[in-house]
Length: 275
View (tube, rainbow, N blue to C red):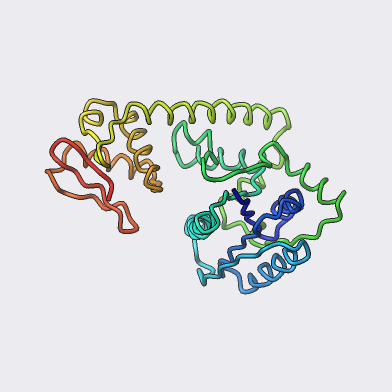
């Protein structure tokens, strides 16, 4: 399968591109239009792709300066998913060890539960730099004389991740190591749970039994719903998952709960399905 590299133009993705350039990947760039000069990033990445003799794919959207991190991320990954389908490829992104730590802290602050300790777990996205620290990335870029763009939003205090990043600068290497060890253990547990759920959940032509939800604890029921929704490429917050559980348990037959993006959870007498 072809590699599709998500390249923003920043140091992380420029290092990723340099590592895989000889494998002739497709270079993908999403221009969110949040900053007035964001097109300069797109031009930089296109020029870099041309220098390496690689195919370049780009999409620009005018999301505006008030766009949230969540919406920008959602739009970006929708674009990457379309490319993966178009080229029958796999998306590669430049997340590294420091990103993992930041995501764990953010998820804990948001109360996402035990899965918040295992972020960035996706079967459709490869993250080959997860064992690299930010220091490793800077070292590689320096040794290979790589040129990259600086995203000015990385220093703006109105983004939660930037605030977390600033605080984590003073975290000891020993503490970071312990966090990453927890991440690895939880990631393994995450994968094991998904395998087990796939075995125990009965799927009859897209219909799932209500009995499992009705006789499980709230936490277990939410994990089951989360898994079912992931099969339909739908991701919800913990409160939204709780509403799904309540709907399955209490809705009258044929009533629907909106899941956003024109998707619904339809509840029947003995089963439920995602449409």
